[in-house]
Image (cartoon, rainbow, N blue to C red; front, side, top):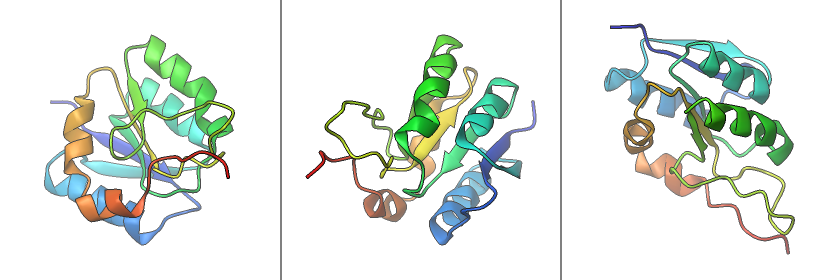
Length: 132
């Protein structure tokens, strides 16, 4: 059994991020947490062997995830919002990834991580809506 290392934000740690990480630890989906900077770097850490990147907050932007999502997808991994919805990149949507970010390695069951994030955290992070 490989150790499940989860990466998360170094500079934007919030109660929702901490609660999501604690839920993953309780379900044995995270043995340890590494706090690093940069959304792209976090996804690269997933590609290098970390189990997941969890950011249960709305601070990440489209330009932080678009390129690394393509690379992760090509490698067999998955990137969605915290609720498991695809991140939307159309020109008429908000620039913030308001639903948070969850990226998982190819060897990880993404849905298991989605299902473990507490519903109250998901409810607090709405789906991306169109610009107004």
